[in-house]
Image 1 (cartoon, rainbow, N blue to C red):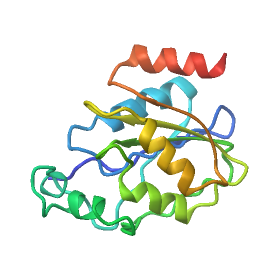
Image 2: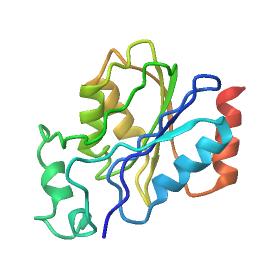
Image 3: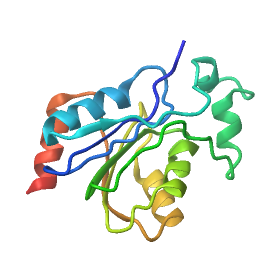
Length: 171
């Protein structure tokens, strides 16, 4: 049973977006929200694939020996990305992830280490049942100070909420 993995979308002609959805709880919420954003911006959806796919057991928060707990407890953990992602033609990237313990999953940090986001506008979005996005945004901004993180929002699986947010961003 595979868990959801990173998602991204970009489009050179419209606000390019790269929602990156990282190993997320098997609910698929981030993937669904990324799809709504893709529709709103007419972008390209790109998945960040972990070299070693995440299973439902890997993201069992209640098991202290699960992969997500082990990675979370190791600030240096950088899960490998399986696929090569070409972001060269995109100016705007929507980077999405599920919030794990008030932070982005470690594969998001791998993405930031791997890809040059200089001169890109990066818009963060996240999904979570209870945590806000503020701490994870702060951590990512502090981690990569050269990236132009312009905003971020925790979103629920709601087409209306996503649509309203995109309208706010464009106003």
